[in-house]
Length: 469
Image 1 (cartoon, rainbow, N blue to C red):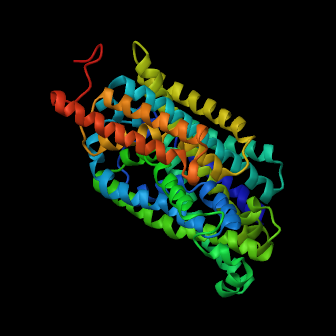
Image 2 (image 1 turned 135 degrees about the horizontal axis):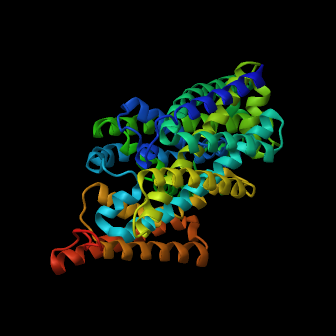
């Protein structure tokens, strides 16, 4: 019965995704569809996008090893989403003519800013897609008994098929199904887990006392703050999340959807983390990466187990499809088109975007073969984004008028600080190089912007490019 439920779910998702491809005519359709989604749809698709293998299986594995400190660290992501809802999303209406992050960046920093953002967007999206594909292989292997390679081929094949054909419309429709499953499945798994161990009090007695404290020898206060900031900054405004800011019916719907997603993530991260403690209480000798699958496989009754397994697959697929679509849009809209003498036509752009989706997906499969812990891969992928793009992007979205030179100086300082701190100094005091890189970018960007304003009242629009008035 469980296998029938899972296979039926996969067929439904594939069918809906392929059906959604009807009527897709242009790259704009492929990337932001009709821009008329309500706050509740924004909430569901955004939550389904960011809650992937790292924030579920990876979180449970880390809590199994380090304790509840990892849950608190993940709440940095939740805080980020609440801040986006309060300070960034209300300004999204000013960018309704854009289809990508690079398009937004071009407003202030010219073609240079767009292309750099596009290249980094492709890298971070491909890396995170690879992480989700790797998690997909593990889920199929654990729950359905197929090999990891076969699991990657099946799961990623389905995602690539409907993402290539249906674009953002397929992603949003399938995300709605996947959101319902993850919203129901994970609380059910925790409820059965608590029943097995005898409730929270029994759980607290069964796990090491240090796992219920924030700080330990493995997790110092500085290390926890650094990890919190890494999750807060690393995935902020990456391409799929910016796409969600661009598809709402208005700025209010976008802000409300972002707020709901941030609030939802707080208990959800606690639930997936506590499942790691449940596994530790029952099988302390377990491989930490198997903690969440162990709970689902051994503690859930037939039928409900199939539902939760489908939810686990949905968690991973919903992140993979979002980042896959965003990578292809960034490649076409922010790298290829700006570098061409003549932009691709709408029809050409659509077909090239579909080809790019296929190629990025296949590349993610290759990358996934070398993944161990999904959460570690996510943290590594963040290095391609936050130290370069985050500060100037936020500045643009909230209305700060800066120029290309300011962007380049800030980006150079962010990359230099990250490189020196992480690779040369080896992250002193456990402070992540990503955090140092973002701070360095902020300081340099702010200083350069102030100098421009003093010298010539600048910080305004970039100089006109060839072919622009």
